[in-house]
Image 1 (cartoon, rainbow, N blue to C red):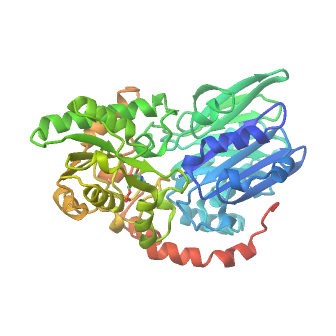
Image 2 (cartoon, rainbow, N blue to C red):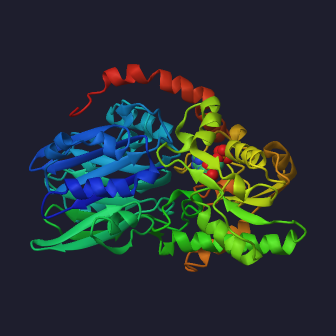
Image 3 (cartoon, protein in one colour):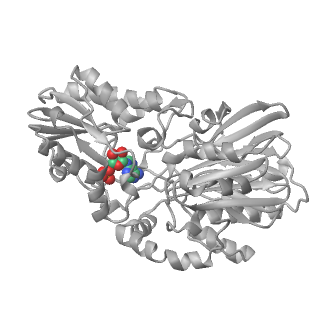
Length: 505
Ligand code: AMP
């Protein structure tokens, strides 16, 4: 869960990169970074925190140059030490900086190969540093003195053959240009935009189209699965399909929860897909749960508001904003460890009693992950005077971990893992629990772009599209993702930091 942005401009790009990152802030609140290149000098600022807290005026002044990349991070692999904030850099060949959204599923193997074949050392636990080194190693093998589009495409073709997983990448090769590429399934999103300046065309590549809208660029197109772009320092754009067997299978969770509603991903409006999810779920409720005596439909803000409004309209019931969200605290799942997470739901949301007192309410959320939020919200609804509390989820039961870059807890911590709906209902203590069917979720998103035949839906059905995920892999993932492992990683942060040459404080 990260956001990336890269710009090749005709003037300073620091402000546009900053603005782009603020537009992508929802994709990661853990750390932020920008690297620019001014002549032959690389400029870097990265640290833990929100974009607005990481970059002060003095940092912005130092981020000079007409080409740059930026990153916001929520860690899916590795610890949350600021040593792992991106972009990452290697000095050979040319000097390369890279920012990555996604997760490599064969990172361990790649790290070993890098050492055995190239004596390359990886200093963090981040798979992005591994990806950068695979790219650098392959680029080095091209033995070129100045970088041509052919060199870039040959490199990316070889990178695609080695790395597995979900990835959307922006990279800068110093003195040459900007490279961007997307995994052969297009699991993680990446879009291209352009803007005219007096000196010629400027380009932007970003995780979501909001970053294009918000920076005065116009959307050109989505980067194709497996495709690579090379934009030279002087603004020439080259593109090529570099994967052997590209097949478009974008991550459905971007539409359910992750992306901003005003984004278009793969020509699908995130907002429209959420409205469709609401309609499908409303129709299911009408068809199969006609006996539920619902008085009012209440969303759990904010992602589910568009969904709940549509459910209310299908059911012909009032829609009310019964919960008020405190906008000034972070997302709940940022907190490490279950105890803190439990507390933070109440810090984040508060109920308006008048909307609950004496009523049968249908609460709507986009998804149920651990079940902590739903359980507490149901309790809050009862305390506010609700008679009955039904709960509807716009996503089906989340039963399996995500391995392609969406942060999900270990399988054991997912409330839907190995449980039937009745058992989940019992745990969250609702008077009725209704999940969207997977076929309906797929239809809701696909309706907006029927050309996409398949979506990445592994968290619901355990089918991992890259074909390399076995029980062994999932067991290892489980061990690294459970809360205990996360707190241990947090404890080793200080040691990590000492090794890290923190830039530009
Ligand atoms: P919980 O079931 O308590 O883990 O929280 C579910 C809530 O977290 C829902 O309201 C979702 O909006 C949100 N959510 C969705 N996906 C994720 C995710 N990958 N990590 C954390 N929270 C998520």
